[in-house]
Structures are given as C-alpha cells and as structure tokens.
Image 1: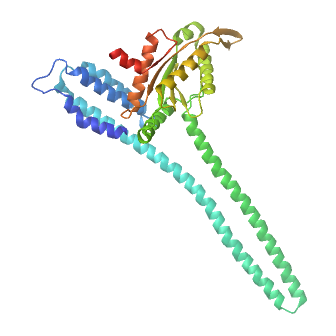
Image 2: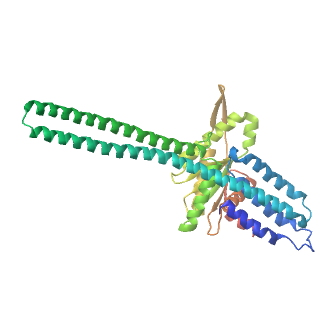
Image 3: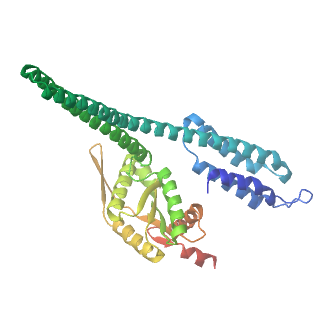
Length: 370
C-alpha cells in the first residue's frame, strides 16, 4: 500500500480509536498510542534519504512526534497533535513524490534526446545518400547519350568520384552512428550500475535495507497474486557486540564480510540476501515450505559455526569461532511485509532466548501463546 494511501486511511480512522470525550477511559492510550507509534515508524522506514527535500529534518520531526506521545495525558488534546502530524507528513510526501517524478522525467528526456539524435542521423543521411546517388545516375545517363568521348569520359570520372564520396560519407556516418549508439548504451549501463550500487551494502556486497524494502514488498505482492508462498528469515551473529568490544570493529567487519561470502556461496540464485542492519541479515527463500526453509537454515548455521575464522589486522592474526541465530516465517494470504517480518523477528527473539546458535520458526510462536 502506498504511503499516501496509508496516511489518508490513518487520518480518516484515527478518530475511531478515541474514547468518548465525556468519558475518557484511564487506559485509553495504551493501544491507541501504540497504533500512532507504528504509523510514525512506518513513515520513518519508507522515507527516501534525499537532502533536497529535507528528509533528515522530516525524520527528526517524526522521532519528536513519537517521543511526544508519552506526554499526552488527555485524549481531547490529540486534535491539534493529529492535525499537525497529518499536515506536515502530507506536505513531505507530496514533496517526495514531486521530486522523484521530476528526476524520472529528466532521465527519460535524456535518453529520448539521445535516441532521437541517433534516429535523426540515420534518417537524414538516408535521404541525402538517395538524392546524391540519384543525381549521379542522371549524370551517368547523360554522358552515355552524348557522342563525344572526351565529355563522356570526364563526366564518368566525376560520377565515380561522386560515388566514392558518398561511400566515404556513408562509412563515416555509420561509424558515427555506432559510436553514438555505444554512448547511449554506456549511459544506460552507467545509470543502471548507479542504481544497483545504491541498493548494495559496500561491506558485504549484499543488498542493503533500501533494496530489501523494495524486494520484500514485491515478493509479498507476487505471492498474493500467484498464491505461491515464500519463506522469510532474519539471522544475526551471536554475541557480535562482544567481538567488536574485544577485538575491535575492524575484526567485526571482517567477520561480517566472511559470513556474507558464505551466504552467497550457500544460497540459491533465486534467493534474495540482504544486510538488514548491523550484524543482522534478512533472506527471502523461494520455497513454499516452512519446514524445508527451517532445515536449510539449520544446515547453514551448523556449517558456519564449525570453522575458525582467521582475521588479519595490521599483521596481527585473530582466530574466532562464531554462531548464528535465526527466525523464520512464511507468507500467508493476508500478510503485509510488516507482519511477515514481525513474525520472523519474534522467532529470532525466541532463538536468542533459547540459548542462541539455533533456528526457530514461527510455529513456536503459536506454541508459546497456546
């Protein structure tokens, strides 16, 4: 669902959560304020980091609104608060939408301009060549009709020279066209490379959080249409903070890079791997079976906990053993990206409290609440 639509639905329905003004309930704010925090958090997660539209300022305002919720003691004071949040959020989303639309239009104009240049060169040269050759043919016919050898010889020589000029011009134009086409292809390739780089984490080479947000949204949409579910996993390195504290962040970064490389070699090409944040990773597994996904991840975690990882920093060798904890969920028909990730995150939490170095699926959540 687009953020603008989410914001509109939230604006229309916030009033339903307020208790009657004449009879405010003492615990009115428990669930309602949590809803507001969730909405504000969603706005934080889906914002674009664009300095031109002051994303940083908007993020600070969102955080301020979230912090300000705890100071609200009377539901009747929410009117101005709600209006302020709605108007400023709506204004920011409009600025974001306009900015992205303008950038897309500029890129389209750039590629269209280059494509039209190629087409114009081809069309104009074709007309020019046909006209020159037509005139050359006419001169050849005239020279053949004349009964004066000298004139015929001179005209025929001029025609051959003219034909040669046309051939040379055609060759030059073809080379120019090929070069221009290569420039267009190179530009398109560079644009695509820039987009890909913006979605990759430079340390691990996996997709970053922005790339993950786009992919999990697309995966949920596709699964809702095709009715073919998929598995989602959240995984992190056990006690990673202790690694950073004891050996330094350089060693910690090497561990993350080595683990990410093992992921890339172990997962299938159709799976989607990303660095979710810090030492936490997120995966989309193209398998409709929660049991099969859990077994795959258990084998992976077991294999990665066996070796000793060697890290070299300033000619000093460090040798570390690590373990991994993982939570797994599977797409349901009524799932959103948020609900699917939330169940995987809750399963990861259970894995941590079960002693770490294990994989817990969302079925454990049902058993815990039963």
